[in-house]
Length: 189
Image (cartoon, rainbow, N blue to C red; front, side):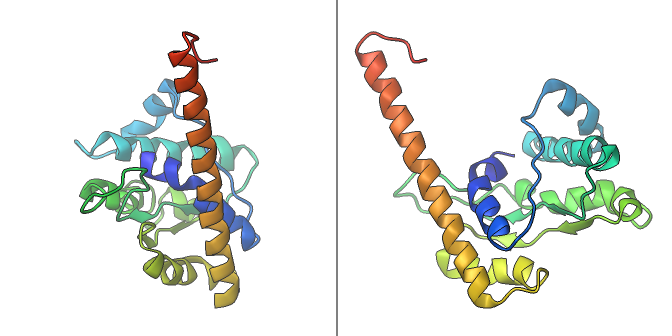
């Protein structure tokens, strides 16, 4: 979903700092959507259907085809990473926040897809917009699993925020280039 896409640099840097190998599913495509969206309930929101499609892809197209996974990370996003400032809050939609529960329902039932493949669903609550909370959340959700110290986890959180700041700077720079080009009468390339 957009929450995960926007926050991915943080989580990638965090997890790789702790020694995890991170595997991403590809960009959402119509074929991925059609293949995986059938796992959804009657009418969850589109981002959750996309999440289910990506989990389907990781199980059937990655794990089952020779790149074994031991865990899937689908966090409870309480808030969205956004460039919008001076707002009261950036809380996530309740259905998006509950996405891991829908993944659990679709794939994690006893004897279900995750259990048969011995894949753990990692679904910590993540308040990425609150630096005063994210350290505890990431330590509880991951560092203990990797046998890493709180100091290791805090260093990985710092690496995650540094990665977010770098991608933001790149996006702002690229946006400036595009706007300057449009102003000068050139289409962006």
